[in-house]
Image (cartoon, rainbow, N blue to C red):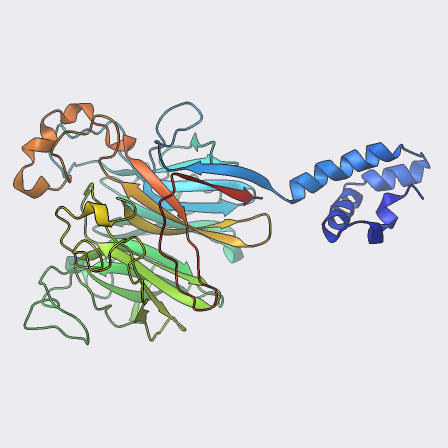
Amino acid sequence: KHDLCAVGSFWSQNLQQVCNSVVKMRICGQYLRSGAMKPLHVFVGLFLLLASQAVGRTVTIRNDQPRRAVDGSYVDAHDGKIVYHNGTYYLYGEAYGNQTLATKYPWPNVPRLRVYTSPDLVSWTDQGDPLPMVPGTLWIPNVLYDAPNRRFVLWYGSGVWGTATSEDGIHFTPAGSLFASRLGPKAGTDGTGIFVDDDGVGYVVFAASPPNMDSPTHRGWPGHIAHNFGHLVSIERMTPDLLGTTRTNVSDFFPDDFVESPSLFKHNGRYYVTYGSCCCGCSEGTGQVVFSAPSIHGPWTRQVPHADVNCRNVSAQICGAFSLRSDNRENLVFNAQWWGPSFIPLADGTTQVLYLGRRWLSGANAPVGCRDICGNGGNPAACQSGGEHYLLKSDLSVWYPLEFDETTGAIQPMQPRSSFTLQIL
């Protein structure tokens, strides 16, 4: 009667699963073979310990202070992605080192890439530059785990694209030469959202500025209002090895221009594309427009009634895609530029879509009058004056747990959250 492993009907399903794990660890088997009659409280204590591990750990994510590594330094990995694999969280982002605003943007060797690891989304350890052998500036890394080939796949921007692979998620090897989209190298790439569908086919969503595609006399596709700024979003299919693009267009251009940092993902069988206005290091941030479709090939429709989930007032100029940001920052829920989703497995078996954004110029000692790093509205001197005291790596970030209307599939509007909790594995 003391063989608790045999009386599963007495325990809940979760505790029975825990007991099965105990059997695998040979603990129950050891007791049974020895014939020892252990006190009931020993088994109960063991069950409670393992059951607590089975239901996960509660962690608190804070958005009201800079993220710090275990050594106290800033987590210098902005505008990137979190990947979970085998009990470890990998955070990839842009690194700014000791770069300040004392010198004008652009900087010749900043940003670079950085990877951090954590057991719990809170305690981060700096693992260094994943591509130290690649020269120049590297932007907006996006990473996925390629399970069939047991490797991490990294895409990054450098005017065009580069890709790399890794077995450990930390040390990457370039996959080959840089390459362009179907629109050619002059169009560039501005933001890279990578996604692998259930059938193993990969896709990349990106913004680009193809010549002669956004002029008022050449609108080119339904619903497009040309502003002659470029930065148009579309989707291409990846090569089978996930390390390049077939240059095959699988979507029309989305109807907005002057947008960047698009993302592509799937939730409950529906496909989503998000993007925001071009920002270039702007302190006010941007909205986040949502499109969805029943298929990767469309038809893609703008979400209604909340097309911009980071906006308090959908009619404000700062909201939507192409936007006029001046003096409209109060209409955004978060003054952040968004970079897309990470997928965090939870203890209850579901997956949290965690959206990552950056709050440019939000750290301590930001120069008064500095609104963006790219010219500052014709007044770059306002950023340089006192700019030697501002470290770009001190920018705060926003990690936001997206919520969905499971009936309509709509992404719910964001709400102010200085912190939140997750029940992780």
